[in-house]
Length: 297
Picture 1 (cartoon, one colour):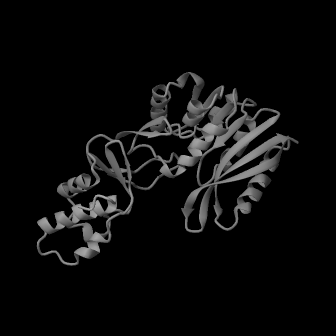
Picture 2: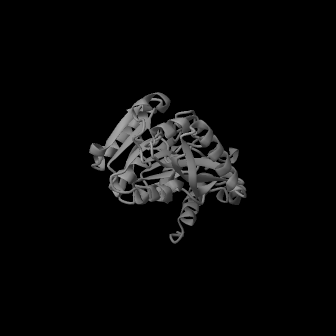
Picture 3: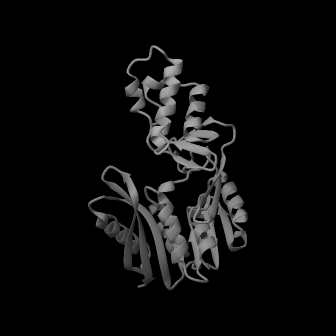
């Protein structure tokens, strides 16, 4: 077995399965070359990419025994495959292939994120941004997280900084259930208040209180820009705004965002914008976070 590289080990396991169960198999190399080379693995589960084993040439081989062989090759007890993130509530369509339990706990930078794989999304590619949020918040700051999910950024801020309080807004009931669990499991629930529902309605009680507001929604959180400005203290603060920009023109997103913000509320003026690249999002498009400093005009 090729133990040095995990994808070669998986290839060997699939190769053995195909040879043992399909003696008249032709074009085996075509199948072996289509085996995924990357996946996520944590706890006792492996999470295959959305495209894995979906081509028609796999159809006659796919069965429970096949998936169990994949588990053996990846040295896990449970197996799942990513799907699309759907709807306004950013719901997961992960498919469980082996196992009956979709509850998982990811451990990252000393933080434990628990959630149901088939109900909630989790972007492993945002790991550096989650870490950064826990590092940049100053002592006694008040934070409003307008799209908190299971606590992607709420938890690093609470666990890693001395923020005074985080107000976390979310309207996906499954994510809220996971968030409540995660706040208690990380022993930070006493410093967080959950606002359940559409933040365009529930944020009425969060006016003029925040040093920072997080807008972690893709492709855009523009419908909540006015909410974010209302949440900032009268003296201003910082918006952490997620968005998409052409890979060769980040300034386009910056210019458009400043224009929109300054036309929403004339009391405020953008005084500085720092650009943080999170990851590539699609061909020629990148996921950015803009740190936007807002002051009284």
